[in-house]
Structure formats: structure tokens, C-alpha cells
Length: 139
Image (cartoon, rainbow, N blue to C red):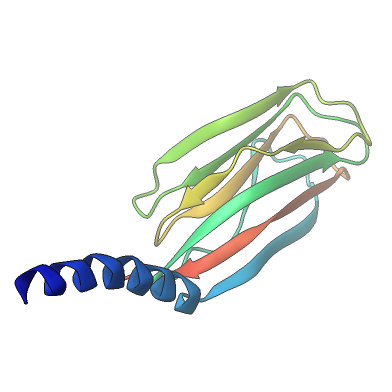
């Protein structure tokens, strides 16, 4: 009887893991923001924080200075203690050119996507477009 129990347990455990993965809720996440610069530099555009019990997978981020271009654009995230980590940057981006990053980044509870525009001018239209998904995590 013990051999049969071990065989059944060995097959049921992977099935239960698959069922759990199907039950875990995933929802699309999109962040779109346009900001009219007042000449303040650096200028940060930040998404909302990841809520408790969830994690956010950012799959693509696009950034643009539609008007005159700026000195630099940095893409990163800020954690729940205010520490910033950068994972991409574009030096001297041209005006009206959409720059994008497809590096997947997973943000934990309390983290936010952060885009910093350095050297934008008064009246520049700055854009951030990001998408991915959020999913519940076991607590």
C-alpha cells in the first residue's frame, strides 16, 4: 500500500501546482503619462506602487521628449525605502523619437517604476508608456 501512496502523491503534487498556477490571478498593467515640463531638472515620472499581495512584471517601457530633446533619460525603479535602481539610460535623446526598453523587470510590493528626464526645457512634452501585468503572490 505504501508504494501506491508514494506513486499517487508523486503524480498529484505536480497536478496541484498546475491548478494553483491557473487559479492565480493575472491582470494587465498599463502606465501612460504625459507631462509638460516646467524646466525643473531632473524631472521624475513615477507609477503607482505595487500593492500588498501582488507583484508587477514590467515588460516594456517607452519614453519620449516630444519637443526639444533633453540631456538624458533614465529608466529604473524606486523601492519602498526610497532607494533608486537604474536599469537603462539614453544619452542625448532626440526630440520626437520614441525610445523603448524590453528588459523585463519584476517589481515587488511597495516598488514603483521611475523615469527620470534630465535637462528637459520649459514647455517640453515628456511621455512615458509602460505595460506588463500584475499577479497575486502567496503570502
